[in-house]
Image: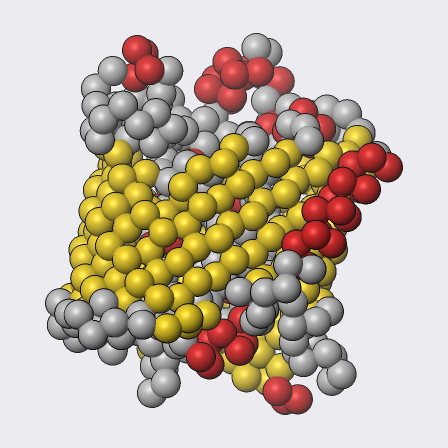
Length: 416
């Protein structure tokens, strides 16, 4: 444990002394309101902070997230492991460069290091940390967006499905993976083009003041880049209603997060021609829904609430149903205006036969659901650094193991 702590601290210190100008989310949003991610610090490590403009249409961004994960009790075994994720990216705006209107190229590189397999400690199927992944260094985003007019946009290239679909902005501070994208998608379809493997895709989106729509197709197994759709494909649609739009809100961002209230409904279909040959999920489909609300409270506090639901009821899917609920309170204390507190519950219903086959146990030993309760506090230390302690209580990890108590301590650094 001491060597792990030393390694994480060394990496963080090295990053913080790179000598690059660093911006926080609030400053970045002011300088570039089209920068795509809601103005919430401490987001999942797959999201770059807002881009900082260099000149002639070129901007860049970078961040490093480091954490220590500890399973205090229950699960498979007690113990700790560490994770580090760094990402650096650039975008080129053809309009700002004086070339043509509405064009934007994006490119990012991601590096991931994990000292152990997290699920071998807590044993949960939903994955307690949203940055745990196998070690890798890869290009994560390489895409082109064209804004054709005030309401129509297209994107093509290597992208993350979860940048655009099944996103609840008020849940992004929570660390459990299910709050980022429904486990009815990721657990049932290991070929989903999302963290840690983005994939080739084409997306068409429209938006007005009150309605947005997105339709996309992504390759079915981005971990193996043999050809675009040789290993199947995933098609997705999402429609949303937005109320309470403010004049200064950007309606064309990655997540279409605008308005005081939002209602989203999405559907997806995964088609796989040879699942046995490639060891992937058979063809399946599902749907999801998200409701969000945002309110201003006395003392300049900001309260956000969300409800997520997912369904993939085919009898071979390990997770047929999902429900997530939570709250986020910004500016919780008068002298801590940039801090926030989030609580959430993520419940994944389990198909005993499918889960038992993966664990090589009897279906009768599988509990019908795994539920994670999470409490997290994000503290802004400086303009450069956020620190986030997190506590999760996981009932029936994978429906089989004893209830687990998990603690995570995460540091988030931004540069450029």
